[in-house]
Structures are given as C-alpha cells and as structure tokens.
Length: 313
Ligand code: NAD
Image (tube, rainbow, N blue to C red; front, side, top):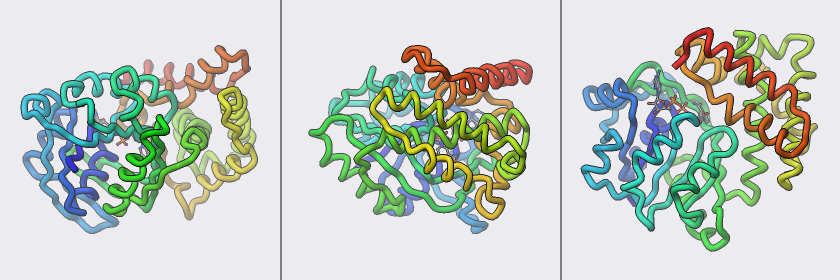
C-alpha cells in the first residue's frame, strides 16, 4: 500500500518515520520550503528518546506530487487546521476515486472541509495521542507513546477502517477503530480547548497554570461549554471524567512541564494558532444552537488579539 502524508511537520514526520521503519512505502508532501529543503539535503533527522537516527524519505511539494503522478492508496492529513483546505485543494489531482483519506488533526469540524473534496465512503476521521515536536526544519523529536482512534464515515467502509488501523498498528502506531470517534474528538478538544489557550495567554506551562487557584474552575467552565454543544449533536460527554482527565495534564511528572502546541505556535514560533477549530468552533456552534459559550468566545478573541499584536503568520 502506498501512503502519502500531507503535512509533514512534527506529526507527519513522526508518522512517516515510523511507517517507513516498518518497511512501508511512504512519501511526505509539504509546502513549507525549509522543511522540504532540509529533508532533501540531510534526510529526516529523528530524535527518538535521545537516540539520533537519519532516514531518507521522499518529500514533494504538492505540485511535484501531481507532476510525478503519485498515486497513494492512503493519504494521512497532518497539516495544521489553517492549512487543511489549502492542502486538500493542492493535492486534489492525486486523490482518485479509490484513494482513502485519514484526517488526524486536532480540533473539530475538519470533516466539513474534507468532505467537500473527498467522497464520504473514502474518508476516515480520527485523532491521535501520539506527540512530536520539530527541533528545526528536517529535525523531528518523538515524544512518549500514543495511540490512534479512527472511524469510517459510512457503514460500508468499516472493513477498510479495520484495514487502515491494522496497517498503522503494524508500524507500532497502536491504532484501533473507534465506535464513537466524535466522543474521542470532543474529549481531546476539551483538553486542548481548556488548557492550550490558557497556557498561551498566561505564557506558562501546564503545571504552572494548573497550580493557580482558578485553573480547575476555568477548565470546568470550558468543559461545560463543550459538553452543552456536544449534547446537541448527540454526543454525551462525561463532564467529571473529562475534567479528571484534563487535570492529569498538570502533573509535573507527566506532561505538566510541557508548553502546549498553541503556545509553541504563537509564543515560540510567532505562527497563527488553531484556536478557531478548538475554541472558536464551540462559540460558533453555541451561537447556532442557542447555547451560551462565553469562555470559548472570549478566549478565541483574546488569542486572535495576541496573534495580531505579535504579527503572527
Ligand atoms: P506542525 O506545525 O509541526 O506541522 C504542520 C505544518 O506546518 C507542516 O506543513 C509543517 O511543515 C509546517 N511548519 C512547521 N513548522 C513551521 C514553521 N515554523 N513555519 C511555517 N510552517 C511550519 O504541526 P504538527 O505538530 O505536526 O500538528 C499537525 C496536526 O496534528 C495539528 O492539527 C495538531 O494540533 C495535531 N497534533 C499535534 C500533536 C503534536 O504533538 N505535535 C499531537 C497530536 C495532534
């Protein structure tokens, strides 16, 4: 099976490395010039828990993937949310009627974008607990262990979902077919939505934020907004269980000393954030459903103000 990873930043590189290490035919596709140049010049440099490895992986710009008539059986989408639609449009000619597409971005609402271009029976929605970071163009740092949950969008595609999960698991990616992917996606969005923007606004790591008097109350207020919105869509979030889950992120012996990705995007790299698909979408859905979502609405505005002040791109 030919696999293409569209969006070869931290996560795309990590997955590309793990899949190729398992002997699979993987091609990276990316639009960020420094990443493409570095991987072509030096290979993908991988920091796997302190052990350094270099792997040669083909990497194309989208237009080169088209020129080279890349015909992937499976495309894994791993851009940031702001780049998703641009990437899908840019690689449209290599998405045939048989190509399967798996989206593993954080946040909500990606299916609305992808399904404008990909037939529902070929599209698989997922999320992942794997993590990774970039130590510079062409240099990926693999962090910890993880898993993938994915689900078909049409009942007739269940067998394919099982095959995709098995393929990813063969590469050690620990994938499983979920019976309730929207619950999994909402749960992770709760974690991202209640802590990422907070750490970014307060310019502190998870542990420092978690140690403040108000942190847990704020987290709970966010989670209540997610749960109210999800309920309208038939997803019944367990508010207490998710609050307990999010609180584990504050543990300094776990990921507490980590600065979340939104912090890294805006504060470290002066990049625009994924706040619209993490918090903003809850405010939007809330408005449509007649539900009050003041925390998500205000936090989205604050992050956008901070992006503007920083001149983030
Ligand atoms: P990333 O920012 O590393 O890569 C996404 C895209 O941005 C790639 O095309 C990459 O080449 C480009 N890029 C990377 N650094 C850049 C820079 N400094 N300037 C301009 N472009 C740059 O994103 P990621 O961390 O791989 O995340 C991809 C998706 O997966 C996101 O939706 C994210 O929320 C989600 N996710 C990330 C992690 C994680 O640990 N990184 C974990 C789970 C889910």
